[in-house]
Image 1 (cartoon, rainbow, N blue to C red):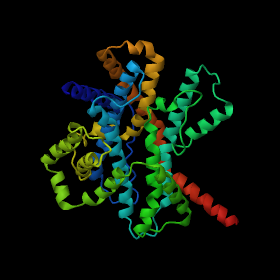
Image 2 (tube, one colour):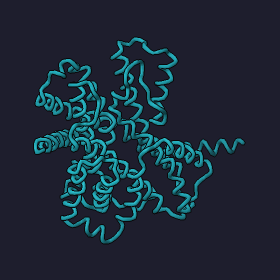
Image 3 (spheres, helix red, strand yellow):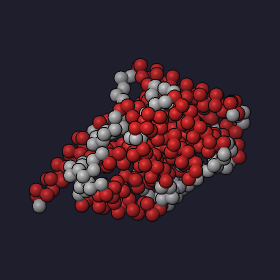
Image 4 (cartoon, helix red, strand yellow):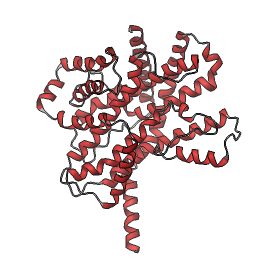
Length: 398
């Protein structure tokens, strides 16, 4: 167990060191969560920034471990240790709580509002997810073409249909592509997107409950959300994230969160489900994670780790890390090393490979954040105005 902890610390150190290098070399604009129409303070969000970076790094370690055993036995399954299992599923549950916390707080802080900008909210969500997702999908298309030697295996109609499904941002079922398991290329990480979209699409319902004016056109969004909700299996982390919006504001919660002992409570709450071998989807495990999450959003920074600038910068590129690390792992194992040669790697040699690709991954993510994510996020107001102007033009002609 100590060996695993040292490995985790070493990889995080490499990631942070790479970030420090590019941070000094490039002038990078830090992009914070959208605070438009929200009363959340920057102080309360600092720890969330670092948490996102930590979680994305854990997911990378989770899939690096899965790839090792997949290379050895050809079976894609959860890691054999509960720690690495929680690095994946537990981190995703935290991500769901973060989503619910940030966006439900917009609803509660704008109760009884008649001018809540729903259009801007959905434009911001689309521009936050779609550009990087499409970049990753087109990279995957390239991997599929290369692996199949640029030959057509599926029927052209089937290939076209499956490719279109992949271009719908996770809203449609994702199939094999030209005989290649495309989900394996993504290590399955895109399974979370329908859950995220479902929560976003159901936000107008909460808006109505809090007497926020919702234009009738957004009722169609609600219908989409209900359809997705019928297919979903995970609800509790979103509700827990919403509950934390109320709990973190309590004075005694914030007072305790700023006490050093709260950091020990966070570590204990995250460790307990692992030590008890609880399934992350069990309600007992999620309540433990929820305890840690509430203290973090209330201001605890885990002995300064989460609020440190390098960790917050890691949080800035966390979406790139989350979405692109499977592509880096796949390309490394399939095309650069080769599966046969990778199978002969000893555990220490495999760890060495992960050490080498970690700064490569962080470098790629720094550039995708700079050239894809940041420009898209910065254009939210522009596209909101364009869509609103187009709408007014249509109605004026009528």
